[in-house]
Image (cartoon, rainbow, N blue to C red; front, side, top):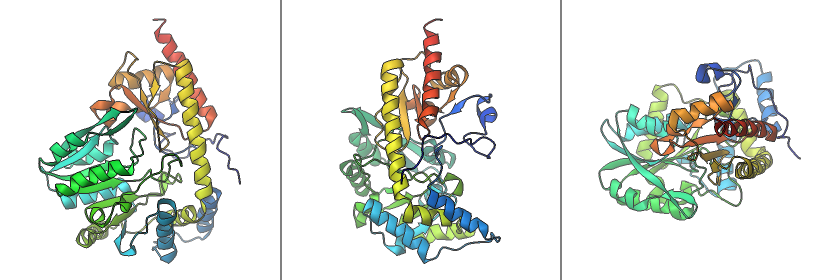
Length: 394
């Protein structure tokens, strides 16, 4: 079956964070939103049908995970990622991955402890460090052989300074890097050598093309698993962000018990009943839709790259190996930081995630979400082209 990703869907007035917050966030209501990391595509029909079927039952009380849920999760990890997870190692965080990582960070550390994060990075992953009173230790990504990678020498030196936890985004947000197994093994070896626990955000792991296969941390061996929490979710790959949910692999029995106790104390242990139906449908029957969505977004990336090269050469697209996010190098424009953000909002009328939100390394960058119909992407690019051409006339 061929799925339709070309037809625009009007998301205005649907309580959409991406489409209904223009005035609140940007001070105008005429921007094209290319910022929030959800897709402007209809969900897979199997998911829509499963949610509609559950909604047809007139009681929306508390739910419970049962065997079909576990079978769907474990089956997906094995089929999609080659990871045969131990059932006993599973934990769940209905509020989502960031909540789970924040809870585990508080379990593992106390205020003042050192937490290392490769930068630039998704801002909630380092905000939880600083806002929780922990000491953020930045290790910069470096540009090598046409892509970002880790600075292993820097990471090793800083790991020896008493770091307690490493926070990792894999695949990487915002650059779209899909780390190789060799790179991930290098990170894990440093952390094991210095007794550093690894919090691994793999929320984007399902949305990678065949030419850049994702290696889940779950495949790096039992010792790595005992020193890590690996976080998965159907939210990004299947466009279910509004339903919450996160699946965690925590092999350390003591830490898993502590985590589950925190979930119980906060009464956050039960999934959204519609999320349960959506997850089971996605993992059991949604793979064909996912593969087509990935292919469509890969074509969007190629179109974006060509458009920039031919018509907006002042902006360079960093090769995006996975996710539906693209990191745009705007260093040839005369703006940085908030000035760059405001130029795009007020002159191009396109809303991005501003690069500075991802750390000081992002001052000359923008993060763009290209999981949208081609016509939406084209309109945004044409508005950017017009605004940037206007600079030369000033």
